[in-house]
Length: 142
Image 1 (cartoon, rainbow, N blue to C red):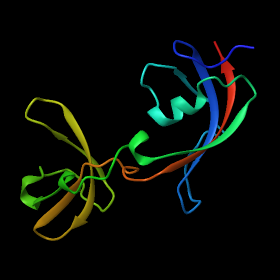
Image 2: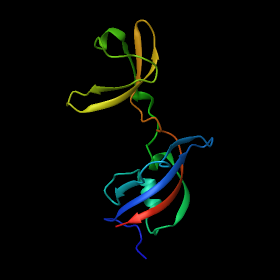
Image 3: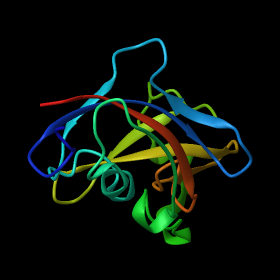
Image 4: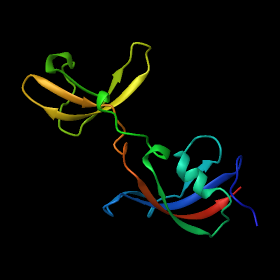
């Protein structure tokens, strides 16, 4: 039996839940998630949990935050004057925006607070600082 290992292309179905049991993502009703093992295409803890599994195998695994999206960083939150946001950019709570860093790279942020004069932007991944539980099934290995 072929087992998931570095260099293999693996397809999985999964359901991801938080500590309170709420579902943050699932592949049900769509194509399986397909990725190459060892290429850094999925979170490290999940990839490690899949290593050695075969087609048809299932597993429930909890991935600590440091092996998922990392810790939550307070310094990744920035409050800026509203007039620094270009006109025409919609500002609503929860809006996903991109900032351009001095080196030209794009930084995804989420609007977390608004007032008439200030906007709070959070550059943390929405799942940063959270342990994640995945119920996974290996669908295919190539």
